[in-house]
Amino acid sequence: MDANTITANIFDTRDTESFFAIEVTTCQGTTVSNNLCTRHAGLPVNNGNVNSVSSSTVFKVTNPWAENPFLESNLELSVNSPALIVGPSSTPIGAFSGTTPFVPSGLTNIPYITDFSIKGIGNVNSPLQINVKARSNN
Image (cartoon, rainbow, N blue to C red; front, side, top):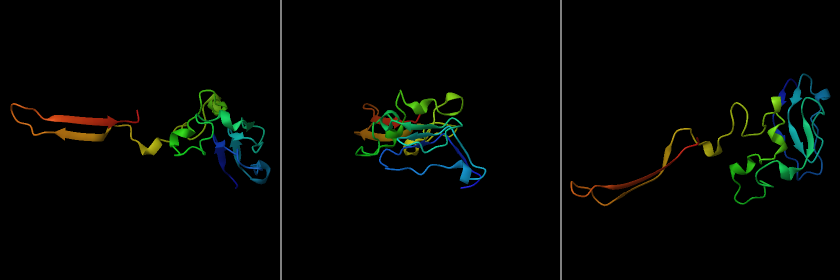
């Protein structure tokens, strides 16, 4: 894994007995910075990396992988998550942060219709009854 940049990631190693560290010394030209690793010290100890964090403090859901059903929103950071300040200039890291954050279920920023119903038949004396429900990612 030579000449890569690994930045602003969360390595959740809660269920692993061991974790292979990212060894910058064996990865020529690779920069590893501002990442967080739970349970193990698997990241280089410089460049803003944080190791051995308690897994239960990172996400809104204590163990997002054990929830049934699994929801993308389980991976949102908790209000006291250490991942909120690990990024460059103390910014959040993880899937929901950065310049192109993950959008749950691919929701767009414009409203879209989730339910549409019409009751009865309209005429001049009795207007149509229309119900529209919409949702947006804003």
